[in-house]
Image (cartoon, rainbow over all chains, first blue to last red; front, side):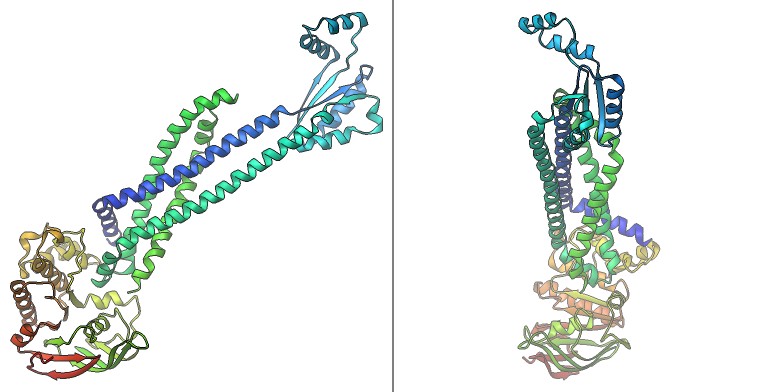
Amino acid sequence: MGFIRILKFAFQDIFRNFSLSFMTVLILILMLLSINTLIVVRIITQKSIDTVKDQIDVSVYFNAKAVEEEISEIRSYISSFPEVTSETFLTKEQVLENFKKLYADNEEIMLSLTELGENPLGPTLIVKTRDPRDYKKIISALDVPEYRGIIEAKTFDDTEIAIEKITNVTNQLEKFTYFLTALFAIISFVIIFNTIRVAIYTQRIEIGIKKLVGATNWYVKGPYIIEALVFSMLSIVLSFLIILFAVSFLDNYLNVIFSAQDLLTKYYYSNIMELVSFQFLVVFLLTALSSSFAMSKYLRK
Amino acid sequence: MINLKNIHKQYSRDSFGLKDINLQIKAGEFVSLVGQSGTGKTTLVKLIIAEERPDNGKIEIGGWDITNISNKEIPFLRRQIGVIFQDFKLLAKKTVEENISFALEVAGDNRKRIEKVVPRVMDIVGLSHKKFSYPHELSGGEQQRVAIARSLVHAPKILVADEPTGNLDTINTEEIIEILKKINDFGTTVLLVTHNRDIVNRLKKRVITIHDGKIISDEESGKYRL
């Protein structure tokens, strides 16, 4: 019976203090939107970083006279590195064809190629690693005397500085988003705590009266805990409705920029349970604990 | 019913609340506690309802030693003492009926008892027709009558009234005092804290005078002497 009465008091308070309830839910929604904006920024940043990283690869140009066994040995050696995500092998013919396509408009080059009479280009291996920093390791592994006669050139020397710069920028961006996340988390905590504290402060006289007429702390606290639960649920539902609408709208633009389709929508729908339950838990715990803490000094009397 | 022995209460180095108070109020008495502002009357009320603890001495209410009452026991004490205040202390967002039934609901009384008791106390204070009104829709006198009705729901043995007429006009003051007298006639011990000379003189009941934190007079059928 006690719990039902507490529920009744909680819903009476929510509706009879409507403006206060409305403001509390609004603040919670704004905080959730801020946090989710940051999640969206992180997804977009991560996608941009991945896209940039994906543009980087290292080409290993084999000597035109290299035999197949030697090339296969190097290919399987490179594949054995856990850092390598893909390796694409282009035969001599494919390389020549690509070359011809690239210089189709350059008559001099095309003429020289015809004069040579044979394919002067060797096969090429295009290697991609998980992280741009890993290229150096792969290249060093290939830079051994027994491979010198087989490998003619590697593009890494030309792109090393660019890779380092990109790595630095992406690392800084990642650090920045972590810093922003921490900052937003602290700001959210402070704002929620203060919103609840002000809400409880406005109710301090009521709390005192309830205690005076013989209410136990549970009867005073209970409705506020239920209110925290209702406010958290309401703010989560409303903010996720807004967020899902916003990400589907944003995806129209992101689809043009990135090759991935519906990047944000896919992320939100595939992680909806984790996102909703985690954010709900955090908001509820924050509001409930802030209520309890803010109330404690009024409950002592 | 109320027994205070050698009570001391000091708020700060220079501010004494009460000094060596010895007081005994018997069951069924109507006692007026008078004194100027800041002399310790409200401190005494706060000690009786355990809103404050004494620095020294012993307080007994109905044989219950509440000197070192635990926080968990306070709600049970407050359900046995009816208290009314100058500022009424009503819950602004609850109707008259809800304000009164709240005191029973938090005590765990069942719906049947609440439906029986609440109309009866509203009838005693003459507010049955205002049960759906909110405090801000009532006059000061009506608000105080709601507070009295609320204080009566547990049929308390003691009713403490701290300046109950302080915010009321003469007519409403008369009405409230009449209700308190009626409650006392039913056998409830009434402790009326006031500095209204006319009320005290007309009551012709026991008067305890406090000055500077000390009891300076205690007369069986006294008058306001300050």
